[in-house]
Image 1 (spheres, rainbow, N blue to C red):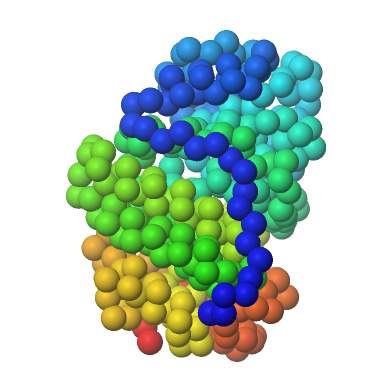
Image 2 (tube, rainbow, N blue to C red; image 1 turned 180 degrees about the vertical axis):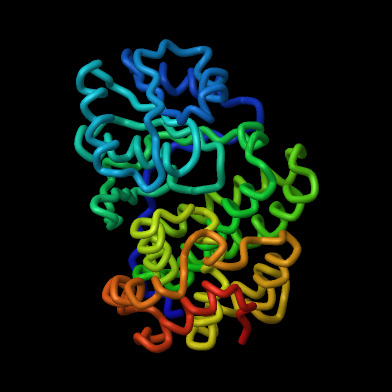
Length: 354
């Protein structure tokens, strides 16, 4: 790649340390001078949130969280923030929780401190998403970028091994999409490659020993790098496919990304040899798809869209929605025929390869 590019680095404070979430959060609330804090956490994540926020004064605990951020949930949360005079949002949880905080910030401009409990990566991007009438819309706005991210690998210990795998592969998808996203440059490619290396090292450790911190720290570090690269490079073919599947058929976010990723990599890699070589090197293999397939086999990763409610009867409609939104910069030109083949393979779960 020619060293002639424009790169934007997003301004964000990151505090990383196992067992330090509560202290780091309290210090950030003080630093930002917040007086009325809204803590957003799902019912499942509420015990973690209570522990993390033990050292701060909380004005409103809010748990009405749903995947893909339905617009009615967003409007309800915005109204609650306004009613209570909130001046700081703290979200504790995964992508859905962070997404709701972003939906509030999008219209209010309120600052966010994100405390992730998964490897979703939304906390490190300025990308928002909302679902209305079974269609997911995404956009970019610096108002939704959390001011601070508090990373603590201990908070991911509650995430079961299978969900850790799916969430980690979702992070890996950020890395792969960043290799050929609409605004790809050598800086985000370097971040993405390091993210792949860290995730490839960390996820098998998490799978083997879900209670160990070493693997979870590597996975969390890799997920952050993945998100930073993705925020810079922009959303590519993989994410356009998954956003349509998730928003239209209400499919689980992480598992959908984990399933679709190898098919998109196999689709694009022959037309992007430099990117494919970087991906392969990050996996420590001679071939990008081989490296991903090897990791997926080690992790017993999600394999087929049919396992999550998507059927062959849905493919034609999905192609109609996906085809117009795939970026023109995608390495290989998508057509109705080859996109249908990709989705058919992903639905059945056949092993992709070159």
